[in-house]
Length: 283
Image (cartoon, rainbow, N blue to C red; front, side, top):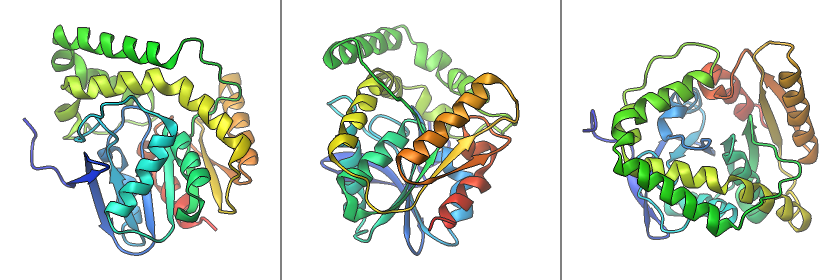
């Protein structure tokens, strides 16, 4: 059972019910989380932005409280979904899109495919794949993901372990200790969310490859771009390589790279003020 009524509302986007939360007034900012994440992951960032912006958060199909989609995730479809969501909410002016991790692909694709709708980008520890080469046909990986999710659901694993797995992933992606969110157990006990997570994971390499192809024939519009890279403060080779890759991504997009520290991958939890500042300082 959900602990209380959903804080947002259901909005039909291309016929699919999506859970959406829109707050504040002023220029529009869309917040989109990484693989398997939900609207509540942005609570701390939204609280800082709402006094200055119209903040739109939504759950991708199957995640959070949104209905599942028939088709597996696709890069162009995710970019189009952002545009269609803005239309459904009546936001016609260009919007700033904040994409975390995997959603960094979607944010960049949105800018390239809908340049007139984009006011700027903030990529929060965005995914980087310099030379993605998926080895299996897309349909094969999607079928495997559906089958695996179905088998785990039949065994009752989402109900038993879903919230615990979500909590472990959250702890691994942060450097600080954060209280458990009251909504963590609601969705992650369901086979719907497990299936959506499996399909997003299976589709990751194809979305990365599609973005590389998109860059070749759809130029970036002349909008401000900030890449906000997570840094835990260590001098490990892995951390330094990641910072270098984030700087290269910023250079690729003609933007600037700033560092959020100390932070794990879930920057919006560790240093929400850095995300809010990146949005408000976007020029």
